Length: 242
Image (cartoon, rainbow, N blue to C red):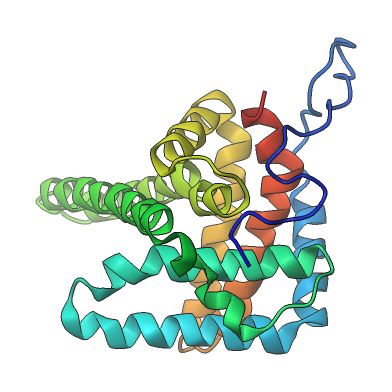
């Protein structure tokens, strides 16, 4: 399987979107339907819980073990997450899927690895900003610490909004990783509120899973990944494929 072999012309421009209700001009609908994306993600998860939980567990264990080499997760995160998103895409399309699909990202290693590195780079930059702000505000008793926490959360949300569709784009289309990141950043700049809302939901699922002794991640992260794919197809892609 190749990364972007999805049926019904995944590499072709999408069909013309419906007209705006207000203007009557061609264009995608303005509403971001978070509830529907979550419902579809949950349905996909419950119908394929074994594959999605097992697949995420395999990815998590490989990345954890590879951390011994320090650079291992940096190299493997992109291909493995591309494989995982690819598996979700196949399940979403109703196609037969197996655990071997997790390693499909290595068939296009250069693109998926670079995509993963770009996402990590943005996260590192966000973390650096958070650390600097935290260090400065740490000298202000009580209030400074509270403000630092709020700013750290805000930086995390902005970082997620700017990167959450990079790897799905590389999986589904032949777009170059740098272009995929540029598209994602422009999307977040142009549609600030929807992008931040999607990022908040994605991060919230990760945080909830982490609070349950990390075991909860085996449920929340597959759901979060399926949520990203639903949002990608319904809301994100029509706005970056003009």
